[in-house]
Image 1 (cartoon, one colour):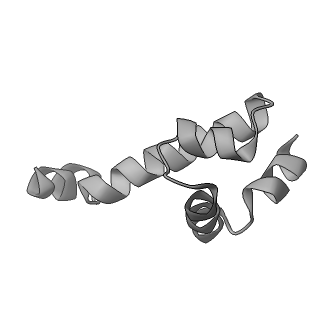
Image 2 (cartoon, rainbow, N blue to C red):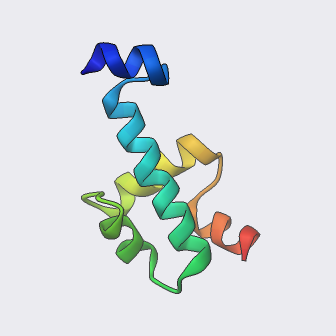
Amino acid sequence: LERLFNRYLDTTPKAHFMEMRLTRARNLLVQSELSITEIAIAAGFVSQSHFSKVFRARFGQSPHRQRATLS
């Protein structure tokens, strides 16, 4: 499975799944009024702090700032 992901998507299954979760979370930030904690849980993260850390690493800003910027 990893070889197929690498060949056709140029990524690993783990990285692809994380990207899908972060994209879903980003959409929820803009399109809903759920709290950051609720969004973290809906996107499959165990805690808000882990979600915020991963989100900031991917998008360069916190979920709070992202929501304020894109709203």
